[in-house]
Structure formats: C-alpha cells, structure tokens
Amino acid sequence: MEFDQFPFNPVDNIVFSQLSYLPMDGIVPGPNERNTITVEELAAKYAVIQRDNPSGSTSDITVIDAISVINAIGSSPRYKDCKLFAYTNNIDLDQEKQFAAFCAIIGKKHSSKRMLVVYRGTDMTLIGWKESFNMSLITSIPSQKEAVSYLEKTAVRYHYPLIIAGHSKGGNLAVYASAFCDKVTQKRITVIYSNDAPGFHKQVIESRGYKAICSRIQAFIPQSSLIGMLFDHGETPMVIKSTASGPMQHSLSSWEVTYNNMVDAGELTEQSRFINNIISKWINQIDEGQRQQFIQAIYKILVSCDADSVIDLTDDWKNTAGGIINALINMDKPTKKLMGKIIGDLFKTARENFFKEQS
Image 1: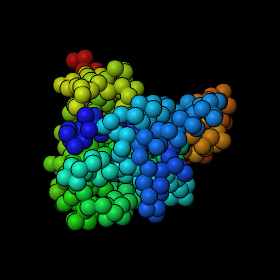
Image 2 (image 1 turned 90 degrees about the vertical axis):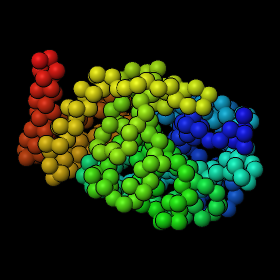
Image 3 (image 1 turned 60 degrees about the vertical axis):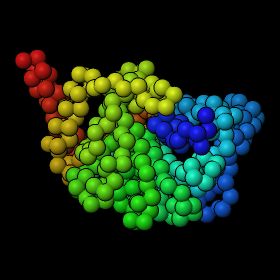
C-alpha cells in the first residue's frame, strides 16, 4: 500500500535506515544540488552497477544488506516513487569524523507528504569506529555537530512535516540533531526513530532540547542489545525479536517485523543485562583521561596494521595479528601499564558480577 493510504511506520524506518548504508556517491544528488532521484531510478542504476561489475563484491555486511534492500524496494508501489536527495558522505581523518546522510520525500498527495532525514550509522572505517568510541569522552562529537547543521540546511528545502531516523550511531545522530536544531525545524519533527543506538552524556539528556523532543522518540533495541545500551538514555525503548544471536542482533536485517510494526520481545535476555551491567560499571570507573588514552592506544595499534577499515583487519588476519603483537611490544611503558590496568579492571568487574549473579 502507498504512503497516501498507510502512513510511514516503524518498518519503513527500518527499510530506509538500512538503505542509508548503500554507497550512493555520484548517484543520489548532493546537498548543494536541486534535483532528486527516485528509489526506482536508484535501483535501476544499481542493477547496472551489479551487472557490469559482478566481481566488485564487498564483505561489508551493512552494504550487502543495503543492496538487498534497494533490489527489493525498487519496484515496490510503496517505495519506488519516493524521491531521494542531499546525499552526503564525509570522512575526515583530522577531525576524526565519519558522517553520511540522505533525505527523501515520501507520499504523493500534499496532505500526506513527509520529508525523511536518515543518518548512517558507523561504517567499517577505523576512523568511524574511533569517533563512536569518542562518545564516551565528549558531549558532542564532530558527526553530531554536522548532523545538526545538515538537518537545518536540508529542512528548509521543503516545508513538509519531518521524520528523522537512523541505526546505531545514526540513531544517536537522529536524536541529537532533533534535540539541538533550531526551534522552527524542531517544531516540524513528528517522530524520531532510534534503532539500537548508543546514548549520550548526562548533560545531553538533561538539556532543554532533548526534553523538548523526548516524547517523539521511538527507540528500538533487540533482545541481546549491546550498542543500544551504552551510555545514558532518556527514552524507554521497545525490545524486539531478532533471528540472530548475541552481538549479531545489532544487524537490522535480523529484526522481526509485521507488515507495519516490530515484533515485541518483551524484555532483554539475562545475558544481555549481565553484559551491559559489566560494561556500564567498567566504563564508569575509568576517568575520561584514561579512556582517552586507552581509545587512542587501541586506534594506534589498529592503524599500525596498515588498515583503513575493519574489513582490512579481518581479510588479512595473519598480518593483522602480527602487527598488533608488534605494536604491543613497542608500546611505551606508561601506556602499556594503563592498558593492562584497564583490561584487568574489565575482567575484575566481570568476575565480581558473575559471583554476584551466582549468589
């Protein structure tokens, strides 16, 4: 059914949030271009890309799932006429920033039209993962600041009600941009979808902007959520069923849905609650200075393996293992001591929580 008959729902949010991982560079018009491309046209262009370059496969599961999505919705009456625009993909090593987003116009009748803003989650680049870890250090990372600017600049292009969405870090950006955008834009936001997204510093949760939009947030986490339980949250998420197990439940493609909603799982698994309790206590007992040193040390170790992405690390795991061992051997004594202490504290916290559960 088309959007004019059945409004945008949580399942549509999953479809577009997964689509955000699709590389659209040079296909979907950028923020400074005035034209648009339909979902049907995007699917046709990707069909040609896949046909002409069948060997150009990727091991990035988020991209693989996004390609499956565009192949599935390209001829769908509900999605094929949606207009996509303002795609941006910005990776800045100096700022430690990985940011990507796109917009869409859904619906045909003026009364049912909505403007959708979708933020991509952390991709497979090492700098993207480092930026996500930086969330534990500062109240606003570069991607969050750019998410606010992006929303304000694109929102003025059309004056339809706004829907904001994203998965993982993208869900965090969706909430942050909605909380800190200008009041005119904020008033137009009807709903914010946050899909297994990490939370924020307490200052964000306690801010006026967050409190103004909190009631409009629809948050979802799978039964074994890990990412979506990190840091502070002000909203109560719906726990949904997943066909995957453990950390793999973070993948949107594993989430169970009905024709217009998620399948309610009721509550988190005991294992998820146990692990998240350990991680929360562990993070809270490390001061921000130590966290910064720890994250920087981990990043330097991974970069020393001549890798730009997580995929590079796993594809050449023998060289990766050798590079990591070599980096650890050559690490300066103060950093090595700090890492030993922090990792030791993690195991100590896990052990204490295990015995507490058994008693």
